[in-house]
Image (tube, rainbow, N blue to C red; front, top):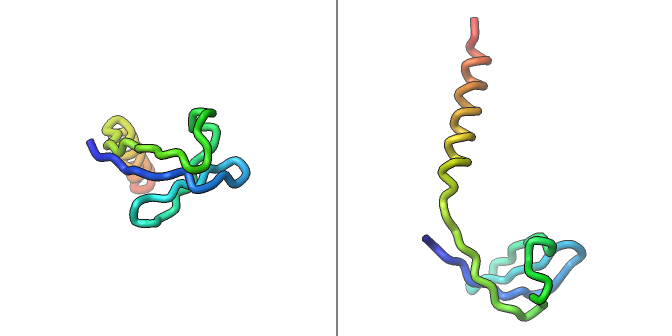
Length: 71
């Protein structure tokens, strides 16, 4: 499992702007953050592969290709 550390730089409308250690900015839906977090709060995002979603996307792609090449 991989982690991405960031600081909540600011809140803009319905998004929190997260700034990573290498100064990249990520927009994150404010509603998906705990309400007690504010600008300046440190967060750690877990990055993991969603195998079920990957399999679903692959299945959908295969079904589309079968439909396209259907005689």
